[in-house]
Length: 474
Image (cartoon, rainbow, N blue to C red; front, side):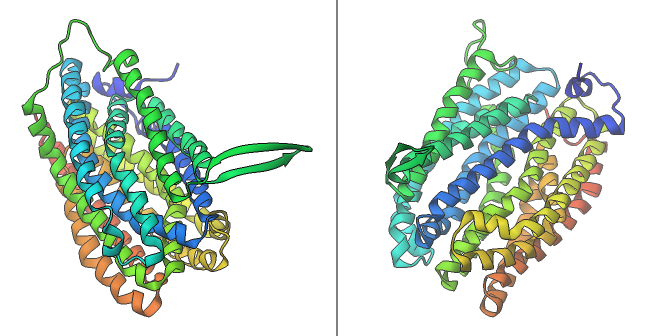
């Protein structure tokens, strides 16, 4: 029978170095596989749109950084609540964890609705503000509008998956994320393309298609999220050992929980604002380079995500592990777990970087049939491969600091690195080296960011853990 390592943490038992690494990988593996599945489905998704032509690909690429910004800022409140929940579960106070969850669902959904209205209001003018060409603005606006309207669904889905993860059930959250990706592909196949016929083994098979193009891609993602969120809510309400409804417990919404969550979430929202607004600035820098460069940039980001998604899987597991360890007052263990999580992430992403460098031509050929896009995409992917190990240190360290509720560090580091290094350097190199210059700037900045996180993890994080400074009563 497999050991329940999180229970061992909560019970105050000792864990050897091997057991610590085993816990990190066991909790990370379902999320890593889900993230990889997500990227594979994104490949298929991007490939579908890529078959429509460079303009359709560029229209989605134009607003993608804006969708990251809106979603990232909206999701910050979810993280604020889930950090608190993880600590309460670690302290074996599941009743309070449920009360925090109920408060979180209500206010997260309310925020999602407010942000959706504001985002939809600017969807018509956003492509022009991003300097998109006239021939891609309409589709870009439509894509962003559908995304905006769907924000409450995305918000509820993000919070539901976060609740499941912070309870230690990474398997269920991984299954949910994988199902989203599979459904996204299925819905896209039905919505993006027109009715078509295939001949298989001498038989003609007619496949339905709504022929909605870029609009179909946006609707497919929204419908996939909606389908899965219904399943997740059912699981949380009826099946979850921690969160299922108890008849003897009345719903309790507390402003004190909201205030505590906002205290954690504000720096995360600021971090997302800093990071994603920088991505928008990068899009603004890339747009004048032409449709081919914009499409190559978008496809290369999709291709690169296959390399760094395992790092995000370890980061998610780290937040749960660190949160429960601090809640259990395991100062003897927390620092070691944070360090070992970062070591794990760097090792995994170093291997992925080598594979990405070698297979870059194949990755781009799967995403776009255009030889110019493929050639440019391969060049920038191979530049980025050199940054992946230190990028892993930044990704996983962010999860460690968030699990501790110390969200100031990621915000500060990202602000300095994105706006004082990446953006000026990218603007300078783009006029001299084109898209390759932009990615050289990105590679340089990620290496510096990773080194800064390593220093902060071995100083600030270690010191605060030893002083029990992260243990805060809610």
